[in-house]
Image (cartoon, helix red, strand yellow):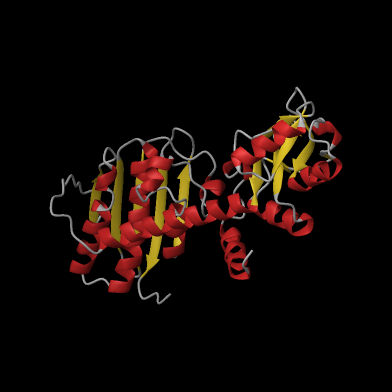
Length: 312
């Protein structure tokens, strides 16, 4: 594989190192049993365009793997009518569906096989993963992030011509009720807040950081909460505070949600430029301090502090 591509995969994998193999593997796996004839196994590999298959018993437990190398041995010895059991590689290396991208790359660096069966906790074969699968997943994820960032940039640099405004004041300098029923509305609150901050002569670089973080928070409410959300902005002498709350599904594990690339959004949502798993990480990155409070079915509360005069 090209060394430049290898290096890029390594760099990307560091960002998504905790992503589990079960999110990437090809499933259901193409398998054969130990009793399958070699001539049939060869045809399956030819038709499917694969270079190897896990061999399983009747309980779908892994007992071997049949590769191109094994088939070459068959042809050399004229055993095309024999059973897979006689030619498969026994005691093959495998991965767990709970292993991560980092585990795969470390393992593959040592073993250097083309593909690995993936087992669940019951030791049954549930998938197959290759380095190509990892590459395709990483580049697809990168594409989702690019679409997400481009849309956010486009939204924040342009005003909406038609905005349904439903504001309320609660001691805040700015407040906005988020329309969670429309994905297309994402960015309305962030755009209005940006315009408001600039009208208050807040530094343009600080305004940009605040509007990006707010956009991410707004997107989270619309995509994940299933409930009304509110954004409040408080302008103080030394800092600006953004407080975002919703009353929806909440977050089961905040630590997971804070990891770059972690997302529970559907593929449809991701194709629209959302759900790249960068929301909370970006909110943390662009703010000076961030506090997140959430639990299942209890909604989400996020407080972000932006220091005025901060040059980072």
